[in-house]
Image (cartoon, rainbow, N blue to C red; front, side, top):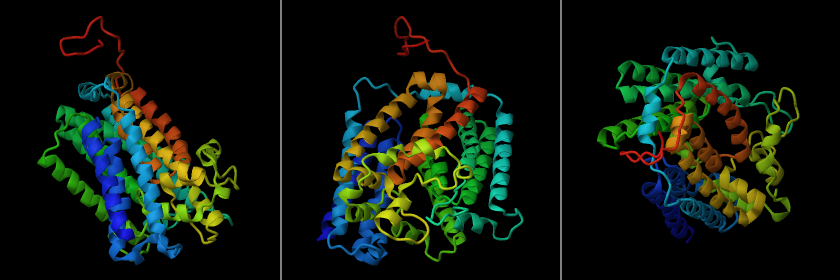
Length: 447
């Protein structure tokens, strides 16, 4: 009976955001609603469909044996998703501007210091890699270098299972990622093979960064960065573009499988997806709805943990984790083995407010839409390069609030934003936008 209810529920929660993205999204294929639909497909629909025939694959089944637990978790997750869609729809206004495609192309065409940007990306990435090696006490010539980075995500792990992730150092990796977006954008606008080649070289550098970070989602980020840049510039969604995106997605899956082997795991990438807590995960929803009791509700506390997340662990050795995963595993579920459980955005909302946490989804959906409009408006594109902030800032925010946690995103994003805006000041033109006395012949309301 659970399967008869959860699979159609998951299908609806996947199809609705995809439809809304096509109907209201400002960018084809990569609007916030499209991203929500993709995360639902891999984290909810695919998993419950597999669990209906292979229940032993369910991650939650290792710890939860309560009858009807999956249906309960699915009801909560579906409510969160539907309220998120409602919040997004309520934030759509009749006078929302059209996507600033022409303005994004103007800004991309005005990019300067391309050579310095390309070289600087490698210098910053190399310096950051050297600091990571020193912090971990590894040699670049070590035969198990990549395995060490992928297997040991933390160093100096304390008795409570919390250690240093070196996230502050890894923040500098945003420099080559943003350089990739900027060079790709100008290469596409000018149809310049040299610039596109430089962008592809930086894409290879970003893959190396993902391998060093041991984070599969950095590969997904790279795919979204490239796709969003192409589409924001008005790229057509034709067979050629879809074939290129499909090939890139296949490469992401193959590299993810390779990263699985680096972790010493025999399971293939498909088993890794369905038996994990990746994406907008049903397992996390099942665990929190089954295990978290009203007495342990955080009542919004975790959304403020970013306030102490700025302090490096090297300075504050006993700094609590700003991610709820350790709290869920050790304090709530009383499991004292190392590591943590990924709670996801809906899971964090439940741990704070119980079933009322589903309304956090409404707030997030509203924020997604208003941020989408803000970044893709003509004024934002001309003054701050907003179209290029969309993949670098809004997508990570959507990913974090669906797949991860709020405070962890705030700490990392604030530091990255400083570097991004510094790069904008150095290499992107910024245009003064003055309201026109009357709209121009092309409909512009600025000069």
